[in-house]
Length: 144
Image (tube, rainbow, N blue to C red; front, side, top):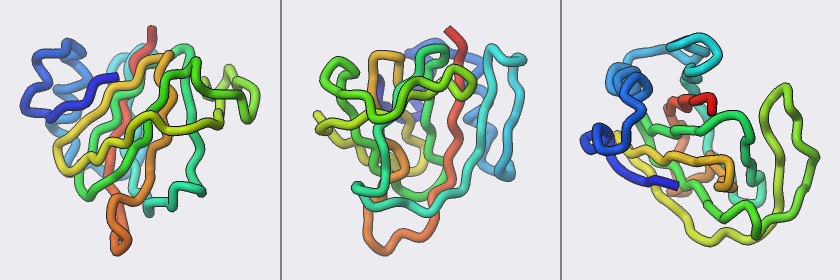
């Protein structure tokens, strides 16, 4: 897992992904191809959830870059080996839902990103502040 700001993105590789994210501020919600199924982005507008409403997830085929365009979001993290399976892996959606305890929580705000690899269970979309109404974010999927 990597947690940083877009201003330091060049340190981590993933050049095409971060170039897209630097220009994502004005994009509407939807799916955006960057390099076919090897690299694409999903721009989302979500109402944040309470922690007990969100599920841990992990992916086998893709790395996730979760980037906050506007708002504030909490993402919980735990190593995959510390989790147990809640719902079996869905290869079509490349997701397995998990249960377990969070090892740490990240608070992402405008311009922050977190990179999650297949060994990183993450629970995104959690409210960082109770009065929060909307999170605008982009999730870039990078095929392994």
